Image 1 (cartoon, helix red, strand yellow):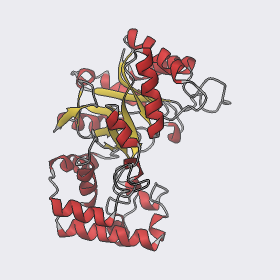
Image 2 (image 1 turned 90 degrees about the vertical axis):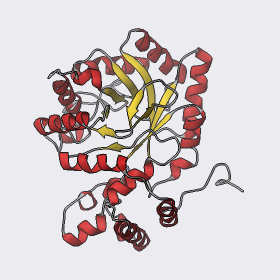
Image 3 (image 1 turned 45 degrees about the horizontal axis):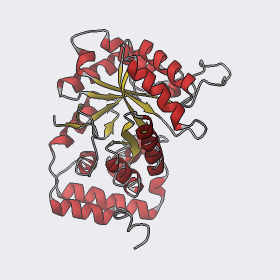
Length: 334
């Protein structure tokens, strides 16, 4: 496994991030533990979750509980893991009416959410605490006041953002600098070969402020994971079950690009999904993509991507199939 610093911090993390959103809804507790053990054995030390994960399986917080029961097995599992979780979503108990102050980024909800996550995770600290979405109603001064207290209490070590625009990152870290706070150290954003808008502002802002970029949905919901091949073979996948790529292949232009992409992977003897992950690992500012395996075999495939070294001609061909917006600020004007 290869490691890198998380943004401007001294924290070393693996180039592959284990995403846990499937733990609970799609992958049972025992299999989730098996996947986490396999990831740790392979050197993956960066695990990502969120307080609301499990909610689409009908149980908010269930994913954190599964991770907590894995930590409880001992064997140095917690000490070896860089743990990232998030808050923002409404955490009113399942089946009950949503109640004010059970969501967003007020100081009250941040404090409440951290304590609840610590209990579910069975740990006394969180390495990276992330804001799952922008809160348009809470000022950054209030957010940083809450985070500074939690850092002083030893409950969290670093703060990160997710789904923030470039100007949000700027606003957050300029406010932090004025307060003498450390500010954001990472941004978790939608970024992959087929969705490159982050290159226009988010990634340049992250690089300017020393944030590590953690791409989510690196296969665009299965679109870049051999979707057309699976379609021909009659293999059910996320592209046919309501994932991010559902319906995308109905567009002839998208279908043609995906076919060219899969043909290119075949030409170089590569699995499409592994090629997409390996491409992200070549991108400036990227710490590591989040992979969300439902099985141990899917984890093994993701791990192989770290070992791939894509030649320049292949990278050029990928840019031709999925051209990015170009460098900023030229992409906006001239």
